[in-house]
Image (cartoon, rainbow, N blue to C red; front, side):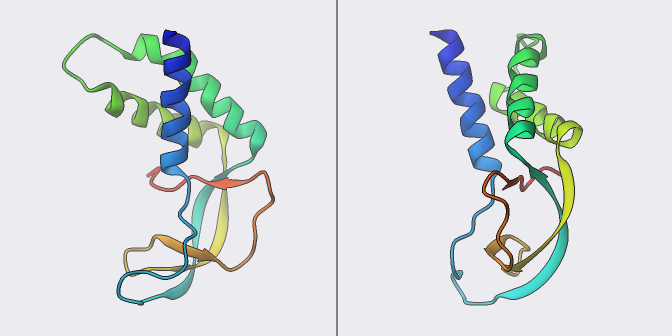
Length: 116
């Protein structure tokens, strides 16, 4: 049961860090720009998940640190270790978040936003 819960948490963390490719934003300010983003393919995403699963027990030092924070940091580290950085051209809002990709990614690729 604990392992299933852990896998669910890991997958939720991965999903939360993937890009939002929704169309438009609240006030309509959009601009096209190219930025370097971490992009994981299917094999790299699997490695990220394995890293988090292997590291989570050792990362939990039983202190007051929230496990959500620990999982986020493990995920950032795993993405930086296992995934590529690519130039991504997209329409972004004023905060720099991706709203719409200009060029489609490979069906197995995922932009891992908020990793920095």
